Length: 109
Image (cartoon, rainbow, N blue to C red; front, top):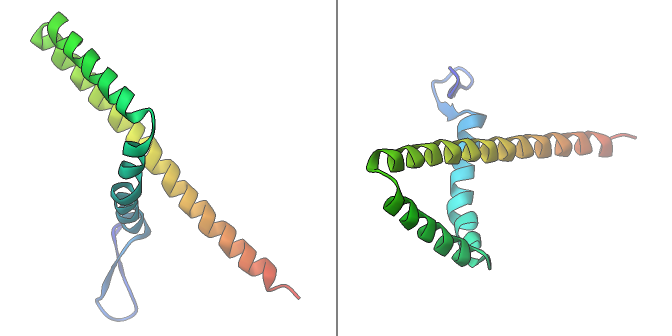
């Protein structure tokens, strides 16, 4: 039961930590990351450069080759997103662990 936990003797179902982190990550991304990137000084220039390169690729490659480039780009984007998600998840877990260790340290006589 990876994504669910039964608590106590009842049948109430709570999301797992992984599900919780996924939801937190998605809300964080939509609320903070996307607007922050739009405000970044290089974002507009990179967007324009990307559009220019995309147009050049469309004009110089066959449809089949262009689709291969798009597929490759999709795999690279997914890989990067996975890396970022895992780093965020690990950061949250490490932060929780540090907080737990700090709480134990401050309870010492």
